[in-house]
Image 1 (cartoon, one colour):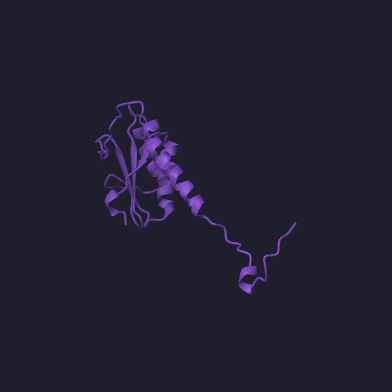
Image 2: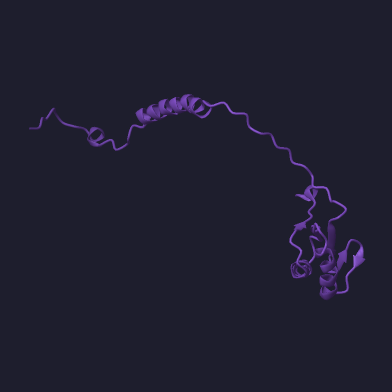
Length: 142
């Protein structure tokens, strides 16, 4: 059952293969508006008082042991140079016997090789100290 209404021109014979997306966009915008209205109601229905937190700069306590590694890999306890890894282990054992045990804070030069800092970590571990931290400069972030 077909119907012939006359001669068709070349322009009328072409089939339109594009999808009309206007109704889809309309439906999506309506759904978006509905979600934007209902989600804040759902998430804030129970009132709670959330805690406030402030970042505090960590202050070095006098009982902390500060070990520095300079650019060339030399190791210092406070300002005193250390002769080698064995000497560092022996000095750290003295601090490890204290009660409470002090925290060791390592200050490594940014241009130093990892070997110097690795020797410090090895010596601290061998001496039995459990609290180790790294001191960084938060203002030098590029």
